[in-house]
Image (cartoon, rainbow, N blue to C red; front, side, top):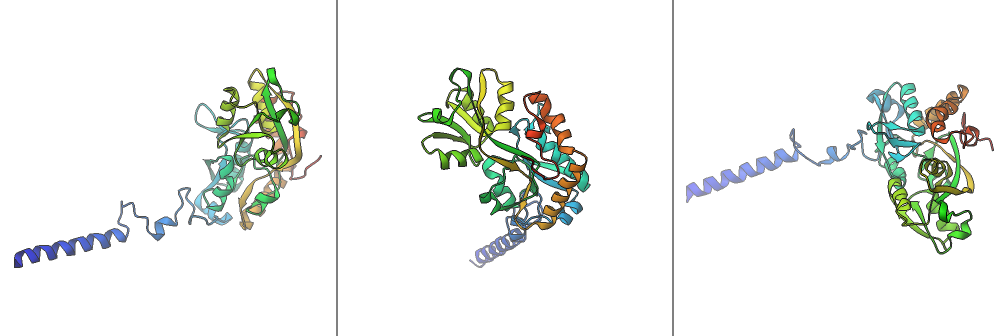
Length: 299
C-alpha cells in the first residue's frame, strides 16, 4: 500500500513538473502564452501594433499588402512573382528605405483589418481614399485617380445604370463599387465575392449580367477578354488611390508623403505606367487620366 502511494506521489510530481515546464514555453513547443500571442505571423513585434519607420529599417524588411489577382495593378505571374503598377511602386519604396520587400496578398475587404492588426506596414492595393476608411487608417498622398466602370458582354452591353434594374451586378466585397451601388442604386441586385478572380469567373460563367469595379481595371480586363466591353467608362465621383498605414503611424506616413513628392520630380509614376500598364492599355488610356505625380491631382 505504501509502495502504491509512493508511486502515485511520484507520478503526480512528474505531471506537475511537466505542466509547469510546458507553461514556461519550452523550446520547440507550440505554446500560445502571452509572449507568443504578441508576435504576429507577419513579423511585427506585437499583434495590432504598427512598426515604426525605425523598426522597419532595423528589421531589414518592409511588409506591404498588395493584390495577387488584380492585373495589371497587383498580381502573381506564372513564375510566382508579384507584378503590376502597385508592386512596381512597392519595390521602389523598399529600395529607398534600404530594405527588402515582403509582399502579403490581401483581399478588398481585408485591407483595413490587415493594417489595424499590424499584419502589414503599408497597404498598396488599389486603395481608394474615402471618409469612412480615413477614420480607420491614415492615407498618404495619392498616386493614382480613378472612377467606377461597368463591364458586360457585347451581346447584352450595359451602357446605362438604368439597364441594371432587375439584373444582377457582380462586385467584390469591401470595394467602392459595393458601397456606391448599395447607397445609390439599391434596386440593383448585387452578387458579391471576396476575391477578384471569383468576380471575373462569375462574369465569364454568366452568373451575373455585368461587373463593376475601378474603370482602369475593367478596361484592362475587357481588352484581354474578347466578347466583353466597358459600356460605362466612368461612374460616380473621381476618386484617388493612395498608400495607407495604420492610424497614428506618423513617422512612416510622413516618410511616404516625402517619398511620393520626391518621386514626382523624376516623373516616376509615368514611368511606372509605361512599364506596367501601357503594354495592356496600348493607346486606349491616356496616362494623364490615371497617373498622379507628387500627390497633386490634376482634374
